Structures are given as C-alpha cells and as structure tokens.
Length: 322
Image: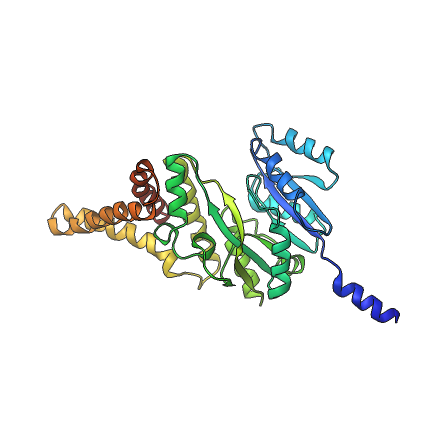
C-alpha cells in the first residue's frame, strides 16, 4: 500500500516553476512584468529570478523593492549586461523543474505558466513556446508590428505569423524542462543575439523537441524609430550568420532571402547606370514593398499604411546587409 501511495504521489506532483528574467534598463516595465508573473493562476510552487545588468535608470531600485515585498523574487547580478550571461546566471540561481523565460518588458496572460506546463506534459517536448504578439501604439510601431506578424517581413516562422501546433526549429522565449537545459549546457555565452535559436538547435540536435502552440501568446512592443529598428535587424542578421558559422548545415532559404535581395538589387542598380533595363529590379522591389506594406496594414489608419513599406525595406536591408 505504501508503494502505491508513493507512486500516486509522484505521478500527481506538480512540477515547480522558476521564471527567469534578464533585465537591463527596464525601470518603466519591470514592476508590471514581475507582477504579471506573480499573479499567474499556476497552483504549484513558483519563483522569479531577476538577472540585473548594469542599468542606467532605476531598474535596480525597482527590483530591490520587488524582492523586498515578495519572497518569491530573487535577484542575481549580471555584470556584463549580456542576455546569455544573464539567462545562465538566472538558471543557476533557480531550482524549478520547469524554467520559463520572460523578458523584463513582456506582457503575459494570467494562464501563461499553467498552459506552458500543460503543453510540456502533453507533448513530451523539452521546450514549448507560442506567439510573439507584436502590438504597437504609434503609427510607426503599428507598422512594425504588422511587418513582424507577416511573412513579408519575417518569413514563415510560426512564432511570428502563427499557425497550428507543431514541432518547430525555434520558439519565442520558451518554457524549458530543466533537464533539457542541463543536458545541453544552457545558453552559449558567445551569442549576444540569436541565443534562443542556437539553444533550440542544440536541444533538437540532442534528440529533444521544440514545440510551438498558438495557445501561448506574449505581447511584444516593437521598436519606435527607423534607426532602432535598423540596429535590431542588423544585429539579428549579424548573429544569425555567426550561428550558421558555428553550426554548419543550418542555412535555410529564409535566411538567404534578404542577403540575396541586397546583392541582387545592388548589382542591378549598379548595372543600371550603364544598362537601363537593369533598373527594373530595384524598381520592382520598391513597388513590391510599397504594395505589400499597404496590404499587410489594410485595416490600419493611413499613416500606418504609408509607413509600412519603409518599415519592410528597413527590416530586409538591415538583415540582408550583414
């Protein structure tokens, strides 16, 4: 009888959950992000680990207040301020069976953790994630959000564009089995960007499954200006190229599309100086992004529709120029 009770207790025990946040210059959003985690409807044990980088605002003070007011919040230091270092420091300081990554400006629904844990258990996956639900406020941000939700802007990644539940290459943020993180050694600190894609690649290479479900949604706030958007996508392309160099065989048509466009359009423009018909290539590209921008923002105000074309071009060229 004792053995049966023990087996039933083990089978029904809820996993413990640790939510990890790499935090840098998040004074405006941190308190709300942490509160959304602490208010989750998850009925089991849950704690939050904040990995604090060298912020230039009052982020540290906000974090200290949060930790003082709720014993479930722990602070660790991330002197480099780099995301993979912060994530690894937070993982090391956590103890949950499930490790859920959330950013310091993320907005998650109340059932996010419970849905993530249920999906891990139902699928047997090592990491589950959902949709990066880009939502803007200004006309420019709304144009960026539309581009990030469209294959015209970011290709066919399900965590951007949505779709049915399935095994995928990568997901946004993620809820991991601790055993999977330990198996692959956590995040690779060499990757300032693209560390999620690289980690998920190693999980899959080790025999694990990365699972997308549309039932998980995280609100994402897009960049607010052309220069900041250009820097973001240049860094995405730059670090994705580093991943390709580290993991041969991970080149995809989606990865090559933007660089091929940059090379082809530039070459045709130069050739067009001597042979006018070649200018049809850059003209066609400009027309395509202009029309495409209007199509993906057709339900938006006029200002957003006019900005969508330049937003698409900024994303394409910044990624492709690397």
